[in-house]
Amino acid sequence: MSFDYLSRIPTSAEIIGQYPISAGLADIKARRDLAISQIITGCSDRFLVIIGPCSADNEDAVCEYVNRLGLLQKEVEDRLILIPRIYTNKPRTTGIGYKGILHQPDPEKAPDMIGGLIALRKMHIRCLSESGLTAADEMLYPENHTYLADMLSYVAIGARSVENQQHRLTVSGIDQPAGMKNPTSG
Image (cartoon, rainbow, N blue to C red; front, side, top):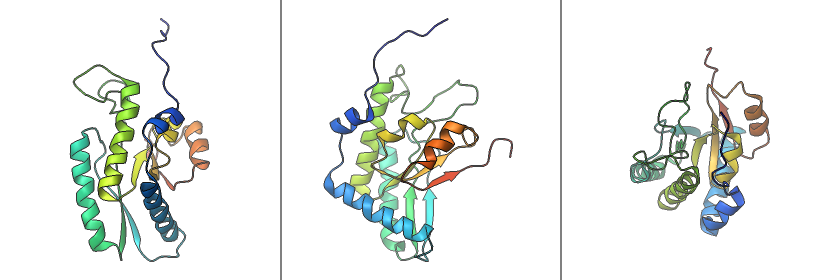
């Protein structure tokens, strides 16, 4: 059995060109990245809180929870920086089951990776623009990081990926802080 070529996946530059972030959103990201860096380097006594569900595929529900976190951020900004988890991929040990918005933007329809790349980018843009919070996403596929790099303030490497050399090499070269889970072996 071999693979059939169905269509070309647009590059991250093409998708970003179609769905760019505004200068205002880029400024929010720069300010948050600085605050996060100050916490990580010990220049601030605040704490980072990376919070939220393990899967993000319903844009309205995701934006609702991120907007609530945005309101909470204003109340706790002197002590905490909140980073919402907007994890757009679902790792599957067996490869069976719903794999997240990247693969299937509408769980009721057939897989559509091009539509998924657009959907996940639009969801991150909407969350950032409505809440003022930059997010965390899991790097399930290293080659997809560039589709969101201009909006993410944190990247997670999951238990199934943490021992993969491509993930480790990719994460060592990105500009965002990254968290590495324990491997599935413990």
